[in-house]
Length: 325
Ligand code: G3I
Image (cartoon, rainbow, N blue to C red; front, side, top):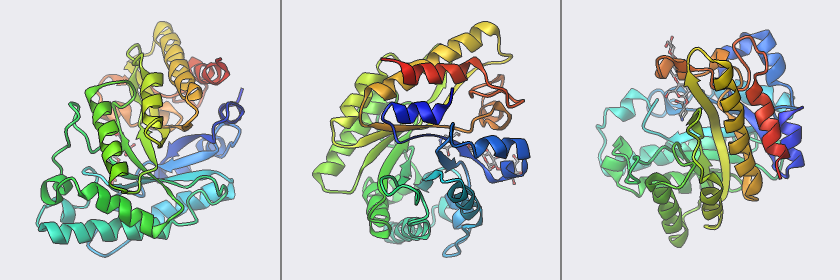
């Protein structure tokens, strides 16, 4: 069983995983990360973010991102860019909110332009068919209204088109995404995303895809994923699952691990069923490096491999999802 092989056999472009630079000194970890039978795509989970890439105004640092791109290229894996415009893991000089509208617009434009341009032709070079950026990350509140970030409060909603247009100018071939969590099923938040994309399309703002993060909870996977993905696709954009993990209360029991297997299968089967769902990325592949326990106390075990890098039932749930009719 191999996750990427089954994804490709299902007509998808890739199955992939996030990784982070500190993990690259873990040899057994890297050996599996490089295994293209499972992973044909990599997303850097931190090193292309604003705090890392423009820590002070006009001073860019691409060291971490370059390292991951180098590794991916060597292994003929695609890379997904993550992310230009996000309110979290920003740099202090932006977060401080000391800029007027015009200045912040130009700061945002310059950041996205420089970032996307640096990785142009590097991101996903191994496939001319695929080149993608999470240009805007997490713009929504749960009720579908816009999150009041430094960008939204200072610039207004047009910060989204500023970021998208800058990315398009920097790399005309890149697929430009807006990415968020709790967008899996039909909900006020996914309605908000559908409406935003409709509006951007009407205004001829470049937008190619909706990134559905997929940070889910065992036993609570929405039942309307397929319908929701299809209505996204019907807007004329592609869909990618960009950060999949399915967490549980710790410690894992046999029942929880079996439910998790079913839940992974459900999510993957929904992507398989929607033609425009182009691929799936898990948010790292082993529980050893999952972000979950650090943020949700008492929860974790969210990934298909455990902390000892051993495959869990969830791995075979993904395989079953790809094999589903
Ligand atoms: O860089 C410092 C390091 O110097 C320090 O020693 C260490 C001690 O805790 O912290 C390091 O910063 C950490 C940073 O990742 C870089 O490794 C932060 O504590 C940690 O909170 C941060 O977490 C990241 C998180 O985004 C922040 O929101 C996760 O690794 C990353 O996986 C996660 O990814 C996000 C996506 O970008 C967007 N969607 C949600 C997803 C999960 O939160």
